[in-house]
Image (tube, rainbow, N blue to C red):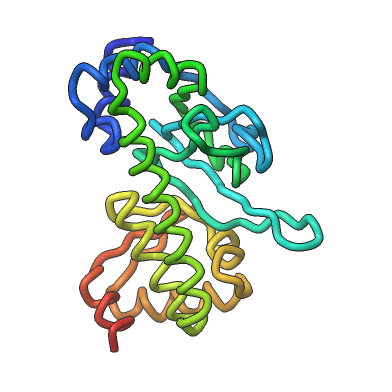
Amino acid sequence: MSTDSLDRVAAIPWFARQPADRRDALLRAGRLSRRQTGEWMHGEGDEETGVLAVVDGALKVYGQAPGGREALIGLLPAGTVIGQSAAFGGGPRIVTAITASPSLIFTLSDSALRRVAAVHPGLWEALSALVYGQLRLNAQTVAEFVALRPRERLISRLLQMSAQAGGEISVSQADLAEMIGVTRKAVNGWLGELEATGLVRRGYGVISVLDAGRLERMLAG
């Protein structure tokens, strides 16, 4: 791995929060790989677990609905870290992750995590915090579907994804529609209304959130 690539991994928030010696050990233990659009990173139920970080590109995350249907539940931009570890009391993979675009992915296998934890036992606490963050986001998504009307679900998802991606979201309207359970036509219409009032700007495969504060107030009202 090049020094530049390692520096980019180290700057990802979850890694940046680790003590320097533990972070360096994690960077040495992991593996970087270039992936093309549509490559399967892991599947729900896989016994081989571990942690992966999106350095460039994005991941689509799917959960299995009744009847075996795969439902798109999230789009993870660069800077996101997901995963869990059977080595630390977890179980099989709970979601399927597939690259949404050409991506640079950093992976830490269970065996790599065990090696680091043998020297840096505080890694368990860091992994627990990572899993907690994922559970919190999942709970927010469930609450969104129960409590919000479809247009509000769109605004809530835009705010969530904008916070992860730094304001500019690489997502198609079709994917947005699937994530919030409406038609693409409905999403296109609502985005047009938000754009007309200066709250968002649409580009090719990109949506920029221009005024998160006003969007938040729309939800609160």
